[in-house]
Length: 64
Image (cartoon, rainbow, N blue to C red; front, side, top):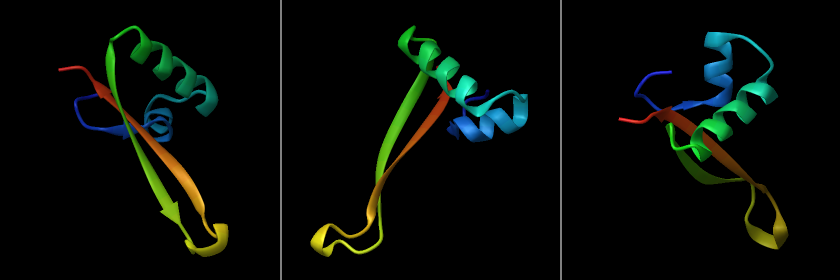
């Protein structure tokens, strides 16, 4: 992991392992204050009458 923002899937592709386990490990590192985390809500699809979906993108980076 470097100082650029990366998703758990991007980090998993670089380091290997199961994506879920990588995501859990990243959350533990964030809770311990070792890395930074950024979340962003993304709306996809139609907005009317409860159409579309909301996604949450979570990215991590090494703490500077």
